[in-house]
Image (cartoon, rainbow, N blue to C red; front, side, top):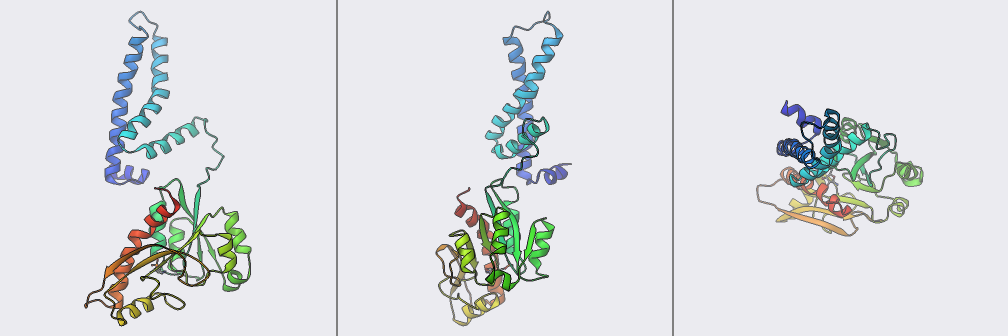
Length: 292
Ligand code: GRF
């Protein structure tokens, strides 16, 4: 039962406990307040039953909704309960059901590989009301990232080189979809001028090494880690940077390092780097967007 609640509400175990505590405290508090109100109104055995029922209903229906928000705040669950309230208000017809609530930050992830970073980002923002991944743009049919998009029911756009470099059509599509920011996560083509112009300082890339070293054209995947090891480096890391018209070049907004030991191979280094990417990329995106 607890497991199914966790799945239904998409929360972890600790959050579930806090949510259940919120319900329990709210229930007790509402009963207490309701009793206080009836005695303040001077209700006694002579008061008509209809009045008593009416006041109780008012407290339960309206008072409860306010009390639960206050209590949830103390349990750190305000966001969860505010979304829960909005659903109730919709059901009661107080909020227009047909009007789509527009998420202010609508991300498109451009990826052409396995998509492990894309998945971490999608997962991280899944319950975030302000930021959402709305589109996956991919240039390789059959890429793993397309299965991930499918599993998360996210729209995909498969793009060909000519359409990407020589036309504006897909940019119009991005704008029509309300895409506000672009996240590159293993997308190997150079970003054309017209896309940079359409999204100035709104395109972010992750590179699996410490730029400005080991970046540039052709420096991707295995090749990066092979070059780092071959150069005898003692550390590598990840770089998250804004995208400009050159490969791996825009302003760096985040770097973190990892040590390279004599036992490391390009494969083990790749694993270390992926762990760092998965841990930091979603958080850096959140900070970059100014939503915490
Ligand atoms: C990552 O290592 C990233 O740094 C690079 O491409 C790789 C994508 O990996 N730009 P995945 O497809 O997210 O697993």
